[in-house]
Image (tube, rainbow, N blue to C red; front, side, top):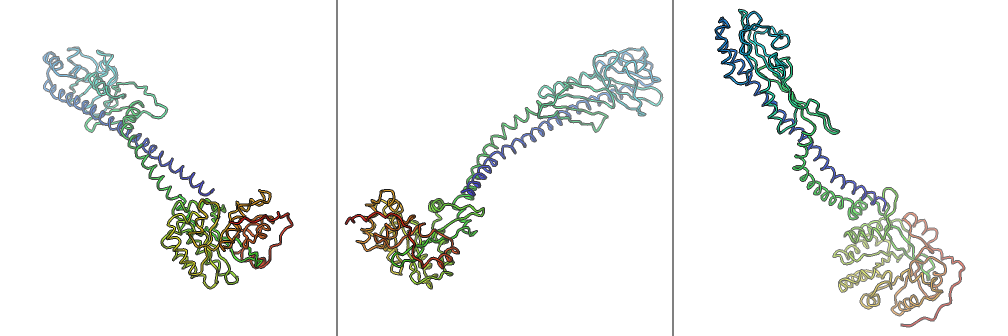
Length: 537
């Protein structure tokens, strides 16, 4: 069925998507979580580095406060004390005193006066403030390492300074970087950066370096951290080991749930139920010819399914599916409703045969008798002769109960026919167990009329047996004049098949019935084999 196939293809796609989607979402959220993890690590590292730099700044400003005790004292008196103070306190490369914008004395250079720019190898910043700090790339005494100078200018032209060696900050950066791959950069005011790490961190094909900047709330101090792509990949891999197994389990569960839901959604059971509710089924009617009356004396009601896209579903497919899915009873009830609506427009003589196929599950259903009686009540004004067509499989289970139901319905005027007679294993035993009215000869025996050069011993036996049991015989699947004549010559009263009329919908049947229903069959001239001697049973 094209529609069902498309829906099943769609269902497979949905199941695949439902399985892949959690994995994609898992990958996406692991990437977000990895970025968040790296960002939190950057924040922690930056705050730790800022805290250390602020503590060192606190020490520097405390040092300058301590140096103010030497205000208005000549360098000759304080030189030794400057050297002692600088050597006893960590972090400091040197301390000194300023007089008239010149270095008057220091722990590093003694009492030799000099210019500040010669020591820091750059011009002093113009800040307009009495307090300032500046990171510098090098000093004249230590040209290969950065430093930070802290300056306090006093109103009387004197001032004091303290210089922290940048190596302390670099060592702290190195300690933090032992577990991460960062590039650190620290600036005091607008000075030179104090940096550690690889400044040429390259972006990978998937990830860009993550940059984080932080500023001190107490000092003109900023820190920049750049995390390499490998840092992000490592964090992502670690998170994936935790989250992806859970995502995989969820993916499998979701696929199972989706498959179960879709199976119910697009199963034959639900397809048939939706088709019933959306009026996709129609009853078709195949006329039955009466050789004695030489006209149409009845019809067999057949169910046909046409999907909204115009495709028809083969009866052998959907009937078998309905039986397998437990939908044959609702489907048969729907057929009865369709028939009851259609026959209201028929103009037929009393006792017009109306044959209805009965499935085994419906026959054994507790409501079977009530269903058939209610149907008969709805169409009683038409005075149909309702015939229940049963297959041999319908009679296998609960034989005694089935016989009781059939007798009850026969007592209400219905007839019973056994369909496809001769194709099962126990057909003859059924003739003894159940009270029947008609035998429908399977088309396989009808086809043998032409395939066995006119010799049909089994068919002849069935016809003879029916006559002995006083059962009416109906030959189904008659498709040629040869088959029609053969059956007619052997006294088969009822003929059904494409040779006489094909199944047609209600509108077409009403038109056909008015035009050809009372007309005898015009037989083509074909060679009809001589009748063989009948075999008695």
